[in-house]
Image 1 (tube, rainbow, N blue to C red):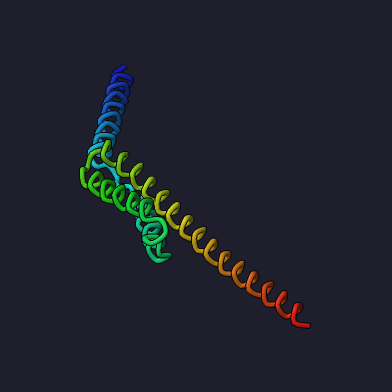
Image 2: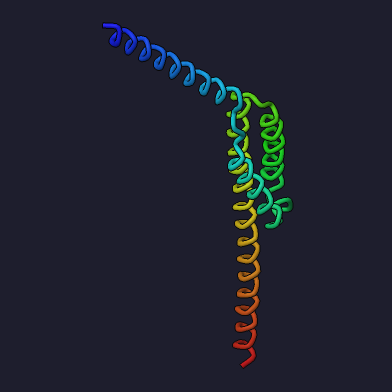
Length: 136
């Protein structure tokens, strides 16, 4: 009988210790939220790519919006709370999308400029061919 009583007491003790350890672990995890470094890094990379593509000349508004959201994301990440980390992640993703949009609009504008140049060249050749045909 005494053995059964000791066994129950030990089992309760073990269960209580396990619950306390779990609660402690959950508190530790909640106390130190993880910064969204991958989102922040992706946004920084996208902004740098847009700047290299010369988006400031072709899509300045989108590039500026990306930069502003990146600043806000960095400030939110410095807040060290779970709510701030979620906000920082969202803002970093928005900054990445704005920078990618700026890069895409820049590439589209550059392609349109090349297309215009090619059309001007083709028009000049057409005029030259007409003049050459009229001279014969």
